[in-house]
Amino acid sequence: MATKPVSSGRVNLANLALENRIVGGKYRLLKSIGSGSFGEIYQGINTQDGKDVAVKIEAIDVKYPLLRYEAKVYEQIGPHAGLPALLHYGSEKRFNALVMELLGPSLEDLFNLCKRHFTLKTVLMLADQLLMRLECVHQHCFIHRDVKPDNFLMGIGRNCNKLYMIDFGLAKRYQDPERCQHIPYREDRNLTGTARYASINAQRGIEQSRRDDLESLSYCIMYFNLGKLPWQGIVAPNKQQKYEKILELKRSMCIDEICKSWPVEFALFMKYARNLRFQDEPDYVYLRQLFRLLFRTLNHHFDHVYDWTHLHQQQKERERERDRDRDRDRDRDRDRDRSRRDPQQLVELEVKRLRRTRVEQSRLSSRLEIGDGHKHKHLDDKQLK
Image (cartoon, rainbow, N blue to C red; front, side, top):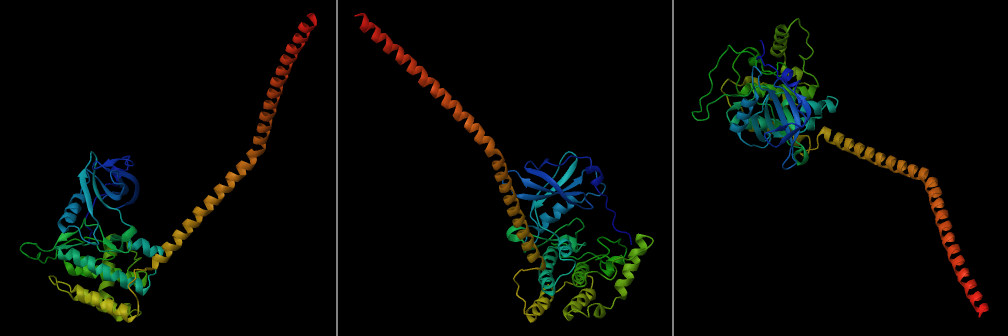
């Protein structure tokens, strides 16, 4: 299956000097922090209140614009915990811009930071939040259609332990919210999303629904457990044949065999997702409870201490140590410069002192000469008398 064609705006954006550009009247672009099929992502700042923001930039003449649609999805879902706040969408002279709250690293970034290994405790704490985010989106009659570790980000600051779901450019309504009518079953669809995490039915060309998001999520969790999915690294002459090989591996995979080194709950989760019918509503409470019971059985505490928490603390300590070293080096350089300048300053002070002494002596001599002259004149006058 061929992926849905998406034209990149990066070629057009490359010629634009976007740093320090003002977007939406008050958001200043600072630096590029990433890119995607739509274009570029910039870190920015709200010039009115000083808050950091993320700005997605898309060339105004891009063939398949995504940002306007993504902004509408955010507006229709509304503000919810675990979804970034939409701050602005608009068109500038040569590009479209979508402004939202700035978030932290993605789960893919954190997985690499942890040397591609998450402990069971971290996987279970993530699974709980992943299921809640997916349920929230589905409750608002949307399916995401591109569930993968890159599209889940941790927050920053006081929200550093909260997981966020992002990138709704490929999202789609699976149900009319007013009539509660589900979209029809079809078998003539091209693959939308990422083949590595796509469901079997999505790769077969079947219209996606909630079950497909859930199956993709099960592959994300498998990825965190194994460190690598069985179909990663497949070599094929072209993309079409590569996707066919991935599909074949997914269909022939024995779930019990692939999950044999992990608690049985993970196999149950994957089987549950694969057995859902097209219009079925997943039982999110059951799935969360499945992992929460396992979490308590293993005597873990939901303290939001993830595998990367200690690494971040160590990194901050190293940064503080580097700052202290820089301060010490700066003090030593200052003392060294002072010690180098002191002899020169002493000479200058001595010269100034000698000059003052000579001036004072000269003034004193002048006064004495003037006084003696008056004395001699007075004596001469007496003698004349």
